[in-house]
Length: 208
Image (cartoon, rainbow, N blue to C red; front, top):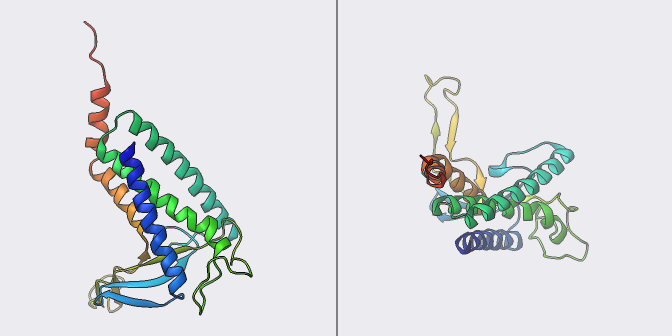
């Protein structure tokens, strides 16, 4: 359980520290290069899901926020339960990453609108006198990690997109998104190791 708690706190602290720094030092659309043209800090915000995807309208925003809260509660309960039952260390790590990432983005949606003003053409302030830019659960998720590693133009013979420009990797994301992605990837790749062995080891031999 200590390992799970350490992972969650580390990811959450790194995610929120970077987001708060971005909010209080950059305005929307501002960017700077970290490593040439392939790793850029680009400040953007989104109303929806991971990697800047959207989920329409006010009701969609509320539904997504409620779903996130329910999901993170279920994940947290499962993580606590499996950790106490002696689950595989890899499964605990994966679950901790997913839980921390989900919680990190929930914090943005739940409270950032209350404690920051908007970042349009200005650097946001923490606890501004005029109040925040949005009510509870209507805050925007802060994204900043941008890796436009490869760009070019599809050849004319390429189906559907022939002659059109392409960019890889286009989405802008954050540490929380990365943690969720890594956690899910771990479970997909090592699911047999995490679950099958755990189930077989828990089965008691049948009595003769």
